[in-house]
Length: 181
Image (cartoon, rainbow, N blue to C red; front, side, top):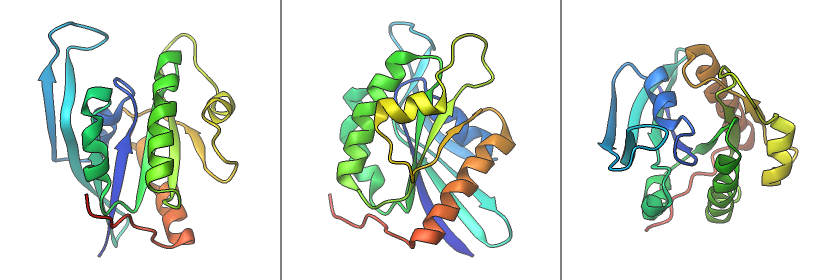
């Protein structure tokens, strides 16, 4: 069985933990209560981790990063050995896109040749939603990188995103980040 390490990153409340939980029957998360209640009552402080079998011969290990900037020191060590990454954004939150821009720049600089996809999440929620084209423009995503509307709570939507990234990894060959921290 071929094994892949995929990092799931993005700003606070973008849906990273939900994405990992949706795909993985068993998962580890490191959520802690927020002292000030914002849009949710808990936040990831170290990582989310889960394993999902894709098809007959692929094992995907998902590593979710914390989204708050104060935990950004974990992004680099969590990315060691990654075969690809998913940048997740809340489609209804302009501030999420602004914060995602910083995160995207970080990973593009850290691992410029690593396959990745942009997940424009929460398309099932009512209200304002940014289009994938708008997100592509705001983040200056190259035309070769997929930007996909996603619903992290929907298994098929989440799995479709992982499959899209696996195709990129297979097509481009493994460009795994193997640097030491």
